[in-house]
Length: 124
Image (cartoon, rainbow, N blue to C red):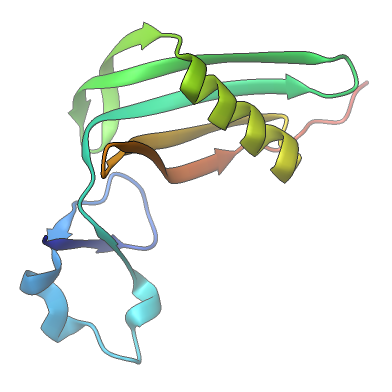
């Protein structure tokens, strides 16, 4: 199994084979890279809204059909009970109210690959 790397900062970064960049990674700059095993497509983004005080939870899944520079430009929308459970657990345990996260398959199971929390705005 090949390991993959991408830069730790920025957005829409290109995934690189670890074997192609391992000479560039040392103890001094290892924090500049994320290294993980390859996940299987599809890549899904789940948008979540959760208000624990009002007992409100909503989500929608977006399968990334087309991307440009790492940004999804075409998606298929759907709902999924297993992804709903992951979304609720993340919202509840991490105390998030508005966020999106990405999942891909790893060894046949959904693996969370990224979480993007949104800042709460003060009620006026």
